[in-house]
Amino acid sequence: MSIPPKITIYTDGAAQGNPGPGGYGIVMISGQHRKEFSAGFRETTNNRMELLAVVEALKKLKWKGMNVTIYSDSKYVVDAVEKKWVFGWQQTGFKNKKNPDLWRAFLSVYPLHHIKFVWVKGHAGNPLNERCDELAVAAAKSATNVDHGYEQTKSTLYG
Image (tube, rainbow, N blue to C red; front, top):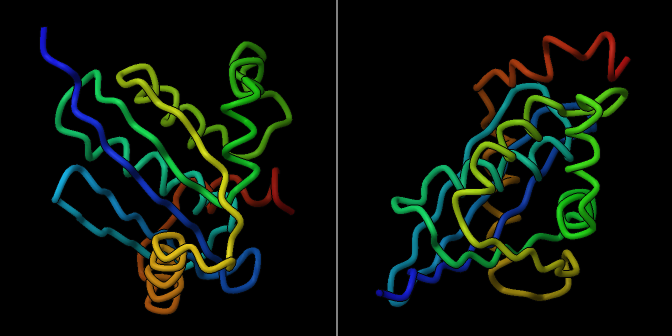
């Protein structure tokens, strides 16, 4: 039996205004390999970008069963998973919860791996967290993508 690959992921989200143009940044590290990803959206929220960063990072993993440690400065994301809140939200169909589309996307990839979340304080000098922030802010500044999940529900959930 082989040992599942280990991967370290740093994520961050940003919004210029909340709501406003937003973006996410991802740094993925496995052994000597490092990759960075980002994307910007013309109108979204900070929490959506924090969660989307995690979802997009997990979607990029090539194999199932990987040992993944995700570092995030989002209490919203880390606590929802580590304190198991999201699983209760799932049982109630995400009733009265924001971002159900992204939580469902997260829950579709979460069981494929062995994932541990670690909260890191944002803007506190952690180089990889700072790099994710740079990527997210730059993506927000040049945002052109449409966050369909936000724009379709903003009048009912965010208004």
